[in-house]
Image (tube, rainbow, N blue to C red; front, side, top):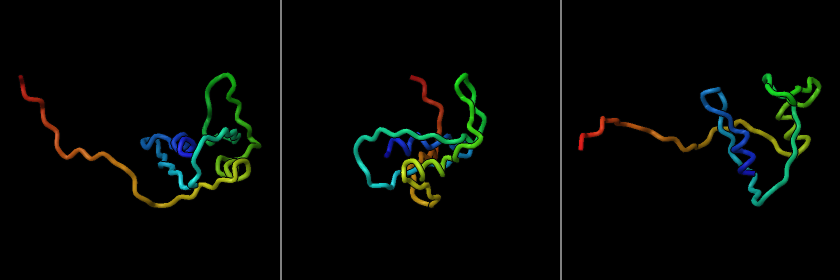
Length: 88
């Protein structure tokens, strides 16, 4: 489930939020998920299904999982000082 959460997390600079696995499930899973993309896709085999479910609907209907927006701790890197390297 952790891998699924990682793959559902998009880049923050594109407005995506981190997805955190809170299922408590461990181990490997072979999952298949079909949904209607919310944005245009590129490539030869990327024909969006206008009648398909959204990602949230597909997660619930096909996997029995629910995405909840909550607040919680995340790991961040803070750089508080930067200097030019000193010559050798």
